[in-house]
Image (cartoon, rainbow, N blue to C red; front, side, top):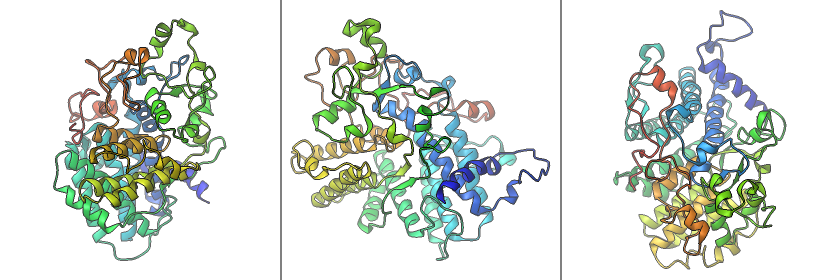
Length: 499
């Protein structure tokens, strides 16, 4: 049955989220005719579409999981960080989250009498606004979603948005009266306890960003959540896809359907491959293919597609055989992971280590996080991997080393799972760190390169170099809302990125 929901949700996004002149055509129901029961999956679908498609793709470049394949040109601007408002990289996500997910949240809340339905809708509202802030920092919030009553809402600071939706979550949970959910819910199957656990995980994710953004008062809240332990089980994943035309994962479908079908646009990036190799990680086979030229995993230096022919002396003969292609097979029917058990356990481990000073509990959560990711990919060997010196908790010399290991393994676990959260966590923690070595110097002599470190792209359109820290404001916002903030560079930071 749940496969049917995908098509219903996709259609309902049109009905519930757009102002359509349908002139009472009986073939096109008006938004008032669509019940909350049917609108709710459209919220889930819209958020999954944003996270699992465009964010998944561009964040994969920003966290240096992949790079532009040598003989392809589809993603040159992403690889070389040639990104500004004219690029329109965030435009569709912005529309999907506001005109799709968030308008449908308002619709559901106006149509249901179940406090459990309202609570679940508020959880999704918090997730949508978290994504907006993590991408563009400021966002319309206090004046948003008023339709023609306020067509040009003010933009609120990211911290105001974060704290606002967290307060909404608390109020919605406090209002629960125990009745069941009435809406169709492919995500968590109307399990209110799972929705409470999902809400707590979102709180924890946002608390950690607030803390590292300077709001230390959230430390006690993070500790209280972890000490209570009321979180979801399994993964929070939009698992509705199949390996059939028109039913595939939205990102995976790019390579199997339409104009890009059969293309090989993406190759492995050097930092990911170097860390896989350094830690003898069997998960490499899940998302990467062996280089045809070298018969091993080979990553391309970020932003260096146009440089490698020169550096190698191969010129135009430098081709796709020299690097590892991304293994696209898992993406065909892959769920969109909104919150993995692995991410949750990594966050718990961090709180136990940083705030509770409980090394034993931190170790247990760290190992549970890695084991959950191995299991998610159907790969054996987690226990042996965790016993190896470079990935063993007990082998780390200091608390800081343990924290770095935790962050690095989280980065690895996000690959082919949730690239948006990988990007956010890398910005929050500053791990992987940015190497002081240039891409060319690493190519010429990598002996002093620290495996896994981010690399300044060899061709980098950011003035002075560096990495992408945020998305530009979407052009539709600039075009239709005079209150849209001044143009921001991708080197500017969101409010919680203080490192």
